[in-house]
View 1 (cartoon, rainbow, N blue to C red):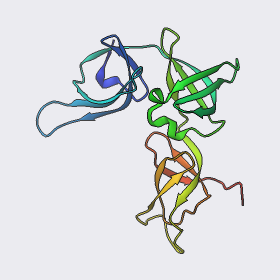
View 2 (view 1 turned 180 degrees about the vertical axis):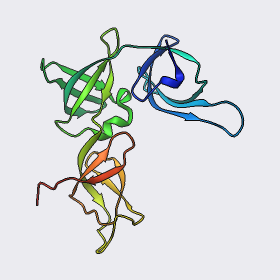
View 3 (view 1 turned 120 degrees about the horizontal axis):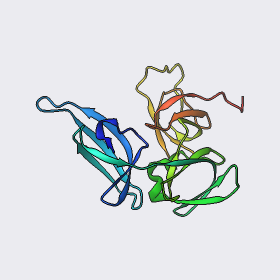
Length: 191
């Protein structure tokens, strides 16, 4: 058992016979009253996401999660295939299990496959950042600086990221996977 105040992103717990993954956990102190935990939680099996408020002292059953390093191979329809890098076994993960994580999947990226205590595949853990190419954005503005308001850019996977005005199509960018924010330009290989 663990108290809600100790829950962090990526942890999995059991509630009413269902496996629940923490997507986001924040302490919130309203003007009046006690501190509460505001969390975004995903039902591992159905993929549904709910916003829930819990008391910090509320207890939940934490589930042991085993992780294996795997490489993303391809996506077909609503199924995404990964290969365990040590055993070469292939695993399929549904789009519902992945949620928004599927927008960060580029060919050959290494992720951690997550298995619940009954050896059931429940999802993936992404690296902290990924490098992607800009597929579409407005033309760059000459003399633009980082401090500008920015513009939307559609990445190769369909992810839309707010980027500085000087970014052009075809550039490789480093994107933070926890919040989908532009971090920096990648060292361009095509220079």
